[in-house]
Length: 423
Image (cartoon, rainbow, N blue to C red; front, side, top):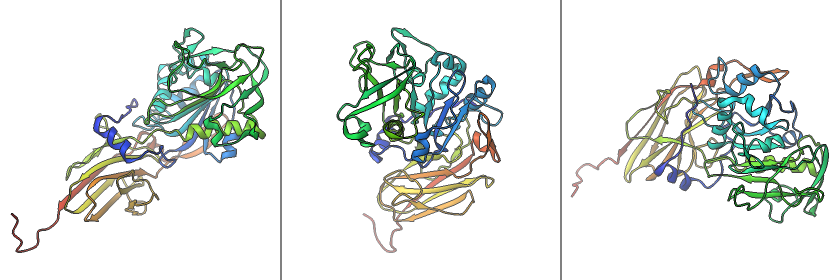
């Protein structure tokens, strides 16, 4: 099964933006961060800033093409790879890509592997990367397009030509990174490792992308990189993720301002997750089968994932009843909320809370007219086993290809009092 991203369109997009002006919450993902240290990249197994922030993380640390293909593209239990849910939505809140050789890694991913990253980003998952992880996010380097790059930022990067060195970074006043640390109050971060990384040219009419944000600029007088953006961010739309990349290497540092820098990069990326997708609008009395029958918006649900549905409740409705029916091998929960996404433990959310059953019903008497949302969450997830290259999955691995269910909403008008004549 190939991932089939479901995008908001027309009225559904307008409804989603009206419902919530906040980014996608941490609730509804398998984990916070996936670190790619695959073929031709540094095979890092720890990320100090992620540990510092208390993020949940999995990683790929291998030069084995077969292992990488199974993790990123597909294996016998998972048709979409670990980055994506069965509907193409992001399974991790953010991806971080290590330094190394960008073109070689992009080549090793193949067309399907590169598309996994693109779907993750387009559907609301954020992206960060250092050095090669910044290069590969662009269209190419200098004036040369590179087909094997990910093309998440539709502009060109430029080579610094600086190898095995350290450089400073200026912090522009108003940089979003300052929301996470004052970095000593001097608008400068010193002594960051650099090994061939990239820079970009702000407002270059050919290669700069309007709407991008300059987060840092280089402090290295001896090279053309000086004063040019070293760290930048980009978000194409409110439904896409946020890209935050840097040409240098703060990722291995365990203390001080450089640790704070990597932590701020991760936080800004995570805070820029796209708005949730709405699967569709439930019609009165019509069962919606979520069974992966090929129709967009009818895909199965993945582990720890939410599916969201809207309902338009008319005035003078006496009762709203929403019913969820799924396979009791898995634990699915149903939530309702008036006017916003129905996420567990959010204010105003109504929960069926029927233990581990996937047969749930919520009834609301005299519901407020207008837009209501139903949220279905799959609590079932995989077990994990450590490997020298990362994590393998055990237990209920069938959830990786999704769980089928049916959701039905019914609403009925207020009863007419006996003897009342309607005119």
